[in-house]
Image (cartoon, rainbow, N blue to C red; front, side, top):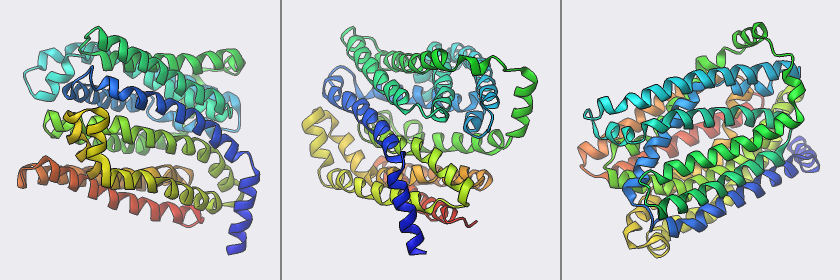
Length: 423
């Protein structure tokens, strides 16, 4: 068995996998250096409360975006025939247009309910922008999977860099203009640019693949891949809401600190692990189809990600509060304390999240959904215990972080079992 694993690792290193990872990683690094470099400027242009409103807006927009295509975009890479893949893309785009129109109407109606609660009030200020962000995000996600299918990793990497540049430009411009919704407008600008980059490439290179798209075939494929809306969709919704519950349930200042940590620490880590995931999807799926297991690539990526996580983890645990105060200003020391508390969960997520795609490779969406129901209940309970039993937002975050460490350990154990070809 050990020799078989060595052979798998050797084949992996000789393949184009690491070249694809390097392409995605390089673009991701550039895309993350830009906002990190701009962060000291932006913290002097925007208040923690504005970051809190931005986080709430993004939470709602991304949650609705997950609804938009019913997660059929996951099926784009599965068909053998390119025409079927194009039909799934068309299906996703039609669904995205319908859901974004509904989101736009809902956003415009939010002020009617503006006196029902704090979160609604904060969201209602920007409700007119909700439909736009939902459409751009859902379209981008669909095009992203087509690009992965075509192995056009450079274009995908470039779209992320252009998004980061556009967002940085918008953040500074709108901040100097004292726009209260500058962070949100910048996010929309960046998403529009990224979507235009992918859309332009597909129109130039792959337009012929979409000439044969027919409604009948779209409906047939929707029925064939119905397990994605039945299980993958609710799982992703629960995951998004669970990870962002602190924004809604904690006080505005703490929610703003949580959001800021997500932007300057967790988001870069997510993009790096996401770059690995994009290449892992294609390679692990192919290994599973050919050999019934993908242990080789799983072990290599686990070791690599675990080693990469050590330095950020140590820095956050020992130096986060002082580092945040020095770089972003003394008023952001509380965000550094938040980063220290969340460090274990963020590091486990960095390592395990890409590998947990194993659930989709082996078709265990139902088990994944059941786990996410448990996650939602555990996270809500942990935050509620901290806030109401202990009357402390810090203790609530400690419970929140601890719950996620346990969750990721469970996912790691199960994913490794799947990688070995076991159920």
